[in-house]
Every structure is written in C-alpha cells, then in structure tokens.
Length: 89
Image (cartoon, rainbow, N blue to C red; front, top):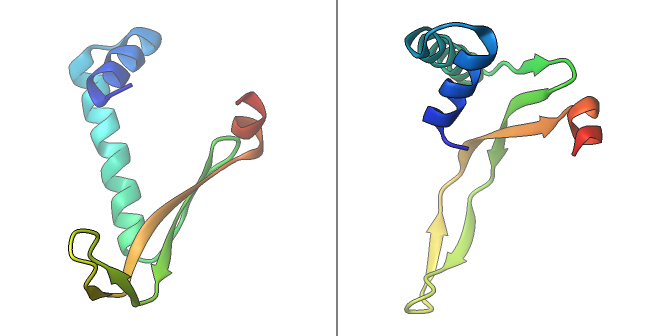
C-alpha cells in the first residue's frame, strides 16, 4: 500500500474527503518526525513505538571493487510493533 492508497482508505473509513485525510496523514508524519528529531519517542498503544537508534561508525566494502570504505555513524528511525499488532499478523 502506498501513500495515495492509504489516504483513500482513511478517507473512505472516516467519511472525510481525500484532502482532509491527506492533511491528517501529513500532520501525523510531521509530528512523528519532529518528536524523533528532538530525541523523543512516539508510542501508539496497541500499534507500536517509533524510536531513534544510533548506529556506530564501521568499516564496509564496496561490492563492485572490493575496496574497504568507512561508513559514518548516524541516527536511524526504528519501529517496534505493539503486542496487538504483532498478534494480528
């Protein structure tokens, strides 16, 4: 499912227009992004938790040349499914 399909589904289920559903989804994405950038976490009970994790710098290999390269440390977003979501899968 892509963003357009999700917007259509939300609009249909909630009985709102696609424009309103798009605004709501964009607002949700922006709120999660700002919270994660600030170092916080977002927990949706029954659905899951979005957190930020730090990856250490490490050595890697260029698959085409086999040359060893340095990969910089960085932060990545993580999602852990909640109990209810995991049970439904």
